[in-house]
Length: 243
Length: 243
Image (cartoon, rainbow over all chains, first blue to last red; front, side, top):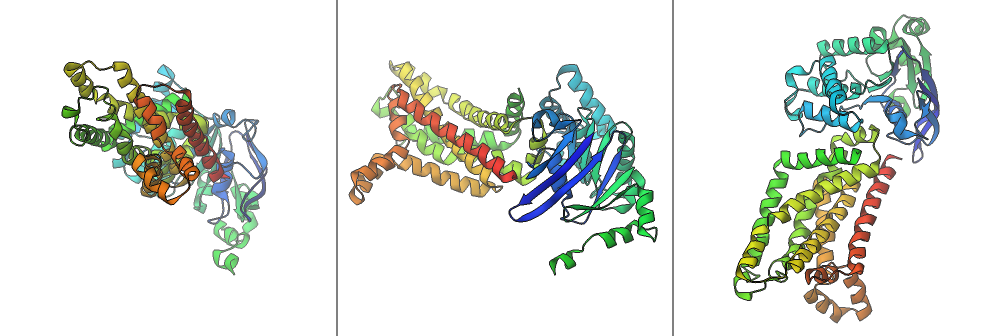
């Protein structure tokens, strides 16, 4: 459902993403791993149509994000890295706005907002201003926004970042559950999450894929049975790349 | 359709925070205060309101219009919500239009609240209400022009204060260029053709004729083209920032 074909992004002379290709099918949860600055967020921003790629293409449900951005965007639910929100709105107001902008109205809009609030357990804060919410709730509000239109493809940029262990667990369970019927691409730094929620994982480093496989395959590849070891061998460290 | 959704959100955001109220109150205090003090409203007997009331508007707008427009894109960029907006199935163009019209609506409300002065002149004398309407249209066009310029500046920066200072500087220049006292002084220093070039950047030529109740195509084209170029420029800058 997500087909990334030789996607490349250059900022000036720096190549952030270098001819990246992979695919995510329906019912698959792909973990997107890599050190900071490896090009994970940039790749996600290109797939969601926020950044135009320098070259290459990404197809969502067969629709090219380069040629038909508006149509492709309707198929995607996206949680940006820092979970940005309009802080002056209430949770309910914000979700209604997002539903309206996705073209929902009347009964369909009301149902979509209610469903998203229920899925993300936001009922207790629905009428509260987003400004007053804790980080966990803000994160879940932004996640609810991504689920509103029941998209076939979910792209989540570090969905568990900054959450407490309970919240992390809940989000992982949610990803796992949603992954049964959708194609999910999510990025993370936390390697246990790969085993907990992913059906497959790729590790990117400096804009290219350095490892790809199911969690079991990656564990076998590591030799020592530890994803951390594999991660450390296949990726470059900050200090090395600087040297 | 999506412009309308964005328009509603922006407008409610202005009125959910103190911004709009503060600006409207300050505008009313200044416009009425200046009309009754320096404008000598009670002694001059200017029932067209040309010199006593409308004359002051560009001076007020050059400071207050940027305060309304500064958040439009600067805030989106600072909080990262631009990433949400950029991945919703809406074009940048419709977002720009929605935001611009929302900011203009705040000013429409502010101008509408000056209605007591119309009642007053109609009570005290026999004014040409058509000319007063033309004055209002002129005022509103000056305001929209300043808003469009502020929007262009706000697309360039994520810092609202920088946006405010730069836009006020541009608007002040546009008010001073073409103001008689200023051009007279300028005429002593530079050649008449240079003065003419400077004057063409000023709002007075176009504002004054409307203020006298004169609808000239060239004035509407002048206002319209500055607004259009600023909005197109905003779109170009926002796109350029992503690639």
